[in-house]
Amino acid sequence: MDFESSNWIWDGMYYYPHLFGGIMLTAALLGISTSYFGGMSVPALPFFFPDKIFHKKKCEKKRVRVYMDGCFDLMHYGHANALRQAKALGDELVVGVVSDEEIIANKGPPVLPMEERLALVSGLKWVDEVIASAPYEITEEFMNRLFTEYKIDYIIHGDDPCLLPDGTDAYALAKKVGRYKQIKRTEGVSSTDIVGRILSFAKDMKVDSSELSQLDRSDSGKTSCLQGSQTNAGHVSHFLPTSRRIVQFSNGKGPGPNARVVYIDGAFDLFHAGHVEILKAARQLGDFLLVGIYTDQTVSELRGNHFPLMNLHERSLSVLACRYVDEVIIGAPWEVSNDMIKTFNISLVVHGTVSEKSSLSNNKPDPYAVPKSMGIFKMLESPKDITTTSVAQRIIANHDIYVKRNTKKEASEKRYYAEKKYVSGD
Image (cartoon, rainbow, N blue to C red):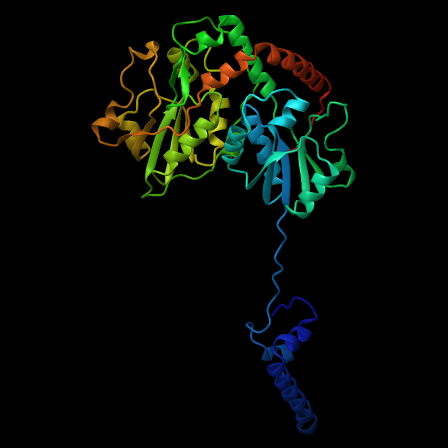
């Protein structure tokens, strides 16, 4: 029988004083008897103690709480991967979302307001707690609040520099007290890059906000379609997709044998708060949410050659990162077929109510004809009136401001790539 340490006797005296005293007295009497009768062996004292009396102490391990903050503007799979890495450094992840005012003071106006950024961050599968209106700089006062009020053990940030307007490190204090940990930046995407894609699209198309407002909505009720045809903007994504990254984002579990599988599809381009809310609503209708993500070709056929703004792998990771999503079909077909329904054991197919077909899709068959004929199709009320187009409008409406901001940020990113070194992990 194994005991935790030689202190088991003291533990016994503490937890079972009467029983322990009686056994010790018996052992003493037996000791006296053996001296009289001679040759009588006495079993070792621990023999008298059943396992239920003495057992190894199970010290409950302290849960490590880590903190990571950010603007999370135009949230993308790079943000999601950063928070995934941060969560891996602890047991509970607390995320601070920087206030609109702090972003304006340090970086310029955000594209998404606080409410939308909070919805996106809260919708990520790795996030346990969110702090709204966090400061851009980790001040001593806020750092102490993190340590005392939120019980934070470590503050996390990426390997890319985060500088204040005066050029100082925003995380200098956390590093000084030894409570800072670093993760690897996700290459190939940034909010600056996405703004650049939209500005490039606007430049090539020479559209203004009034022309852009003519775009119809689609994408499961949340993303817009472009009327007419365009030439390709030629913006190339630098993201290099790997099977390992997909595995890292995946839940790795299929539906149970009797699970109610709900299916929803769309482009899910420029993932936004409207997507999060409709996926949440769809998930509540069943036990397992399967999301079909259209191919780049399908999206281009529906919306024009300038779309999608994010390619298929980028869009797939953004959807996979959502806590309400169980599985995705990467490159889902336009039509939901009978074979597809049987293959995935789909119980219900849903689509958003805010969905206006563009003229480009007039010649396409009804994608939901089969589930409608089977009585398993449902129109789902779209919780938010946010679209990819409406987000793009915000940037184009403030074109000069974002061009100026991006010029500065792009120069900073070029320096980062020129000077970057390999960082292990991720």
